[in-house]
Length: 516
Image (cartoon, rainbow, N blue to C red):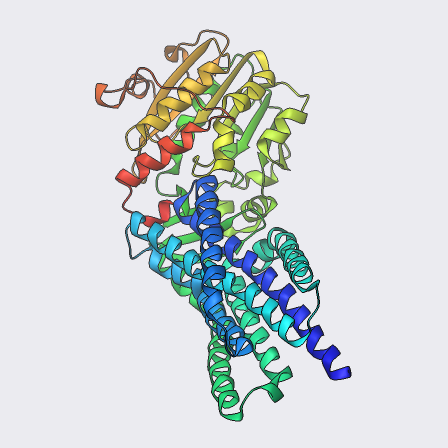
């Protein structure tokens, strides 16, 4: 009786764990695919659909497994653990080696195989329980425990695994967990398995376990090698936060910041970008006492804003507190932002830009949006009509808004979609302009206000610039006809078309994989 209770407990525990692991694999592959290919809604939708269909195929195939069901379950756990465990490392290391369409195919193939193997688990466990412990409620008990395991996965993944463990290591750990489930069942039910078979399965489990233990032990080194191969220059700082992955690289005198593999600036020419972003609206603004910067947590835009004597306060709002800490403490960034984080006029606010705008009651003379490109759904909403309406609400009557707007050459449709969206938000005057930044190519900006503006009124008497001058301005506001789109729909929360424009354009042009 005691032995039966132990065996049943192990089967119940196995059901819970396999339910947890199956959802973890789905979330890991979906997240990895979204990291590299963008458009998380599409990636999650496709992967969920393929995964569920593959589980159905696996469940269907299980009907032909009629002998040695316990051994078949142990085999599935070993194979699933191996494939599921290496799925994310495999995708990491193949990303830079294959074309985007081929990479997408690999993602679908991997999740399909994982789905088929997962689909075998529950039918096998149900039939094992029916054979060993015939009960009317076996199926409902199995499904209930499996669903509880799935719930556990959805709780620990966003709140623990993703921010604190990372997808790379999590994949390896849960692969090992699957193998451990197989080992536990082999041990507990050893008296029901022939000695020759036991030795064979213990050898397989030992071999796969040794692989996982070794790989987990060297995971940081493997991840570091992957990073080194992915980025052009030597990595001098890397951190995965609950929000994103921050990487600083150094090549000779060039310091570069990457957020989720997308380059944010190069120290060689970032001044061209930040001068164009900041000084045109700041110079034209009749008042510049209160300034809001959305994004720009590295404080380079703030460095330019702080040059104005009439400034009373600049509030930098960035979702990730870690970027503020990096800007405040890292010697290379401190030198680059000229110790702006220590300036008493600067307030750093860790918050989502959209939430901040909806809750704020302060009116600003200038609002500068220095947010990352709309490479995913979460960022795309910060370029929506609804977002720009919130911006407009927080401007003084004579206030000026400016946003970085991607490349008018490489992402032409995305650039003009942002202009169309700012216009749809209700601004009376919208002014697109662009500047050449060697590390990025042509880069675009959209300036907007409720009062008419004239770039001829821009003056640089109050500040010193390295790039901008009166002679440069007419070129910035002039666009060649081959990069002009006269009519294009605008981006909304309900219809986020900007992301499609952006991803299609970059898929056509991008040669440096870290851009995604």
